[in-house]
Length: 129
Image (cartoon, rainbow, N blue to C red; front, side, top):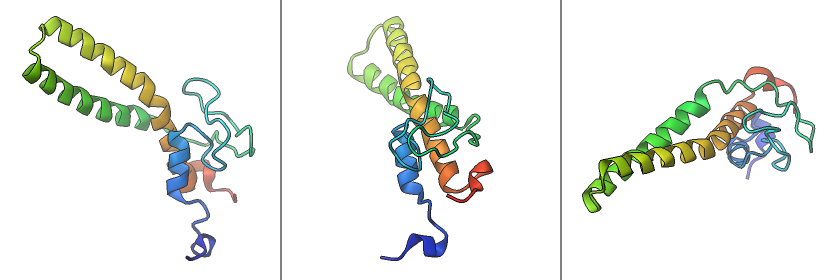
């Protein structure tokens, strides 16, 4: 196994992304990434890593819509072919499902974006670790 720092990869992407998906600090994996629902903490409460540099913008919303739309699309097909429910019941249940999935997926998707940015030293994350 080679030393990652030898190639300048002292911030591996996979652990940072997995920590971000768990809504944890991409550096240490223990500190909370968010201090409110979608507000990234300025610094990690455990390791002190500065996190305010992130520029997630519309990326998390795009990824969330991509996932939710695919799940709902398959659900529409399966529900209609198997059960043939009343259209109003189907629209109501799938709308509620889309809202719940979107609210549940937004924080992990934002954590993923912050993890990628931190590991690739994007924006202000380029300072020495």
